[in-house]
Image (cartoon, rainbow, N blue to C red; front, side, top):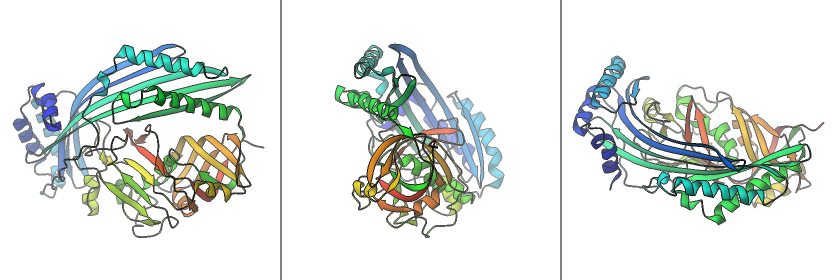
Length: 477
């Protein structure tokens, strides 16, 4: 059964709405504006957390609703409701039509269609059963506690959601997508005397649970969380000052995502509030630095068959060999900037309007062996994992905390360090890249991005790379 047919069952057969009448209501609401759509959504989600040998929290939720948007120039009229009825859509139409005065009178063309499927049409909440999920979490807990006597706490969780959307546009065009998502997380606290440290690891993506819940797979997640915790238990205070920094592959791409990626979103550049505004075609990074946003990778957490405006996702080159090539665009900002949408119009739910957002953003391989990046450093930091961070989009300044990092001494890894923070400026940091490894990879599928109060799943990634100088905030005296 096609996605349109399955979502017709959810949004029309189940609710009693008539598809043709809904198309007419959409035409009446936005037919003489510059752009807009009716966004229909049905979502199921679950979460189970196992802590201290028992289920601490379990939840299941079903939500549904619609968002109706009309766009005129830079103005947006938006109305949403949990009530899926023709009467509610008609009332919403009366609200959004208030922006028509600023419209050009020509509705923007619809996105191109796609027959591509990037993930399976499955609902991961149905299998395994709740009892089997709890039993699995209990086995994870037992396996972890038996691994090392220094373990003091184990927390394991499973989460999944199943989102079905249908987008209705002027003229009766309808597109649909059904999006599965699962995630497994393990967090471990270890202790030695009065000192305690934490390690955590997670995996996930747009697939069924069974892909990640084989013993070989979840054993690996527990082992990695424990490894991180024990590394931190042996850590020494981090040094402070300006020094070379080597970033590891995969998850450290979150720094690239925050410090660089947000600054390449279309809305910030149209409004000229980004540090990258007006720099298309200019060098913004060291030679060899190529950054892409790719929403087309099968089964990845950040991937989308179509974005939340109906535009097919794409492989978008943002920076190529250090030269700024393009921005990530939704439909409104693309139209106002005179370029094409890039498949990056995303929203958290039917209750939120779309905006330019990243999908899977990562740096491509360079030519260096990863070990070369370490050998080139006499004294510095090797950062492998990151926790929280803050970024100012207007100037690119960022602060990120390292959850796993090591000293580099005479080209070799030294002791693990605790309390290291990386401080810098995104555009400036890109110019300090001197070596790029050939080991680019994506994170393990746990990224969530926040912007303007909305959260969406994303992917990040990069190869090992050396930055000749960054400011490191530490705790050593």
